[in-house]
Image 1 (cartoon, rainbow, N blue to C red):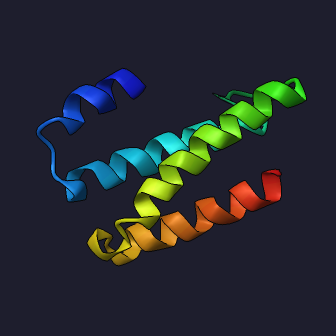
Image 2: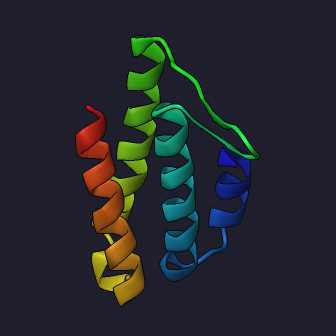
Length: 93
């Protein structure tokens, strides 16, 4: 996903990048907290080494910082998502 964002961001506007950063931050936070994304009959969770989790949380924090620097370009829905993700990040530390 990071490679795609880097390539796309060369010619993209901030408004078009915000949803991508929100999506990546959400996926990083869920994964760092053990959510595998599997939605079958059994809920599958994993536990990561603390070092790995901290690296992932740092990546999500960087994405959220980018969005925070461009809050004026966010829609109401994006602001809501941003605040939700900030809360998840704080609870993950």
